[in-house]
Length: 194
Image (cartoon, rainbow, N blue to C red; front, side):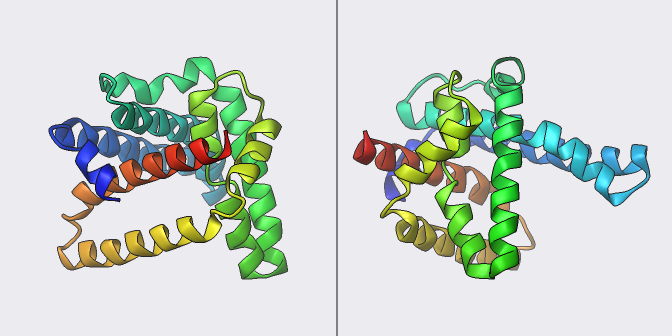
């Protein structure tokens, strides 16, 4: 987590901007989908088509941050032309598996979400991988690492509670920090499984 914080030095501004843009797009997509279709599920369907590539774009943006590459806001939108369908299909498959796990009990749903947590990063790094293999690769990468990620998520949740106490202003810094931590985690796990 400390290394993730170090990687943000001098790059907080563009990282905050990237997170704000992604958040605004996600909220607008949900709102517009619900308004156009006039049903709650309308926002969910439109979100399913837009949010996964934005997620892959954010993963790519923060992998670039971690790797010391030049950061550009346009990176967030690259997956729409490169891996749109794969990201949507992989995200849909993840949701179905996590939903089935959650129906069985809460714990299998949590385990499934941890197991497939690296899918967007895998697609961001390898735009030729198909959705199924991205899920399989994430599952293999997370063998023995689920508890580590769970502890990181708990720390992020505690930081989010602190952000609520700042009337939400703290989320401006928490979002890029959280994304940088997850990108760092992916790189560490990936090296361990290569």
